[in-house]
Image (cartoon, rainbow, N blue to C red):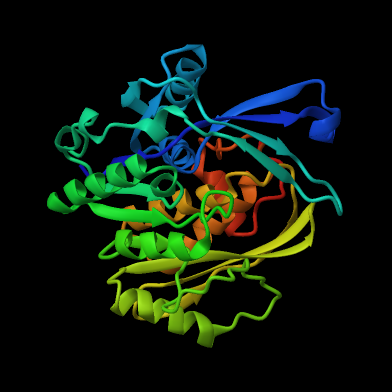
Length: 337
């Protein structure tokens, strides 16, 4: 079944102070649910794909609300186990103008971090699946999560299911050298990787800064390493220029091993940046699954990501793909009547 997509990861409760207040002054919070893989599942489901989410959440009202949120967006949660003590929480203080956003995590001892890999029947989970999507967040949550990820990938490969991995490095979870070492093994022989890893791992990791001019020689070297030595079929990523916290430029670059392509560049104001990368991943996957070129995939993905910046919450809640297609064709500003 080409339409069946499986994702696996941790869904969390996000609490954000209202009215751009700082956490230290907040008296009320907006509540959202999301996580890297869950956001991709929600977006793909809204694009019309048959999506399944694999996870573990506590058997209480918070865990059940997380499941209900996924169900409301058409995601199958029959492989979400109710077990454990708590759902991970993160507090997002949204930045504005020159004040950057800030995240405080409260996810230690979350339900999924204590997962038992034997509780999941991956032979059943992957029945008739076309693609399996995960991120680099889940494997570094705990040793048990790493083992779960390895087992899932092993079974998926046994059934020739395409593997999609979004690196999603989080420096609050582990140092970069440890992360890169883990992920190099996991992304081997994958269908697509969102983000890139250099051949020589550096301990002093710094976020990549984009400023209009793309260093094609650098990316060609990185992509070639991932294609030839890690056997990754497609490598794509977004490059972001921070003009201010509230205004960014975004462009995508990708390679299928034969050529490097770039997308249209957008400059836009930001309402909510969280989940924009997941929206990009969902857009790219949607097009590639439907046998479109990598050029069309990254242009659809970047338009999807840009629109997500205008939507509150963690996921891209777009049920009409024409909205994204219009954006990609520069038709996004007219009133839709």
